[in-house]
Length: 371
Image 1 (spheres, one colour):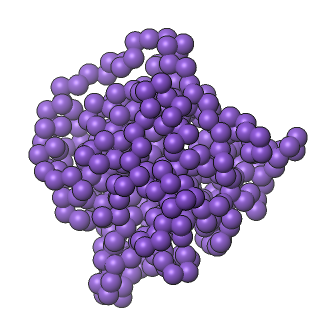
Image 2: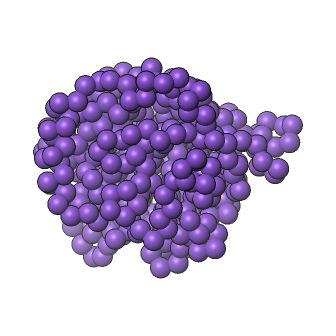
């Protein structure tokens, strides 16, 4: 993890308070042609028809990367756990789970666990699970039903502070309201939470992602743009507009957000743009300069991706399966041959995306976010 996190925060305050909401690009859409790549793997389809799949999260196994997992939300029924070949391993019928995220090394008191947490619209609450590295199964470790004060929970993401080591959950709603919860261990080796901050972004929000190293929170205001906040609850609510929907390749509607981590603060912020069936790529650093975009087209055996909601990416080398990491996207219009089928997720090896850009994107398969 990067050091001097607090110094970065304080320097960023000066930037946030002085920045103006000005377009970064100032060019036409034709100046930034999106690159097309193809998926190599797709997950098993959802058991429910219609708009069911929503958000994926990648979990890296602590000792054997080939045993890593993908956790996807079925927003009509629960959580689905897949292996790296996209085969379903476990289904948890816990309700209308919308967005999901993972973090590593939560201290329960009797040992550390990796956690999966999600926004559960059936109960307007946070659902929390531990991942068993031996079996790959999830088990519920929530101390209680952690009910949100939002009218209806929607988007969700986790944050592990490099400054304090504390874990936080962010939940947002369709009316633009956001809650930040601190997660903590109980005497019974479960996880409870207390709300530490709430604020309003604007209109409808969903996609969010936190940068654990640099201490930033990104939230997509679906019809307006991507906002950048401080993730630490004690810091000001000053914010920066990373990009807005008046710019090419960020037209309505902004959905999933994810971060590609690299060493020394390098890497990318990636946004799924549902209205264009594309993915916009920005520098991860404090400037968040736009780099380019890509789409996932039809391959010989696997169809392309349309109307994406959630996305995730990992830089980590998953042995010979994905030696340079991979990108995963929800496919809103899955197709098998000429027959439309139920939704699933598509996987693209990262080197396909990195190599498609005129100036190749970073490939850093050694940086380990687990540490």
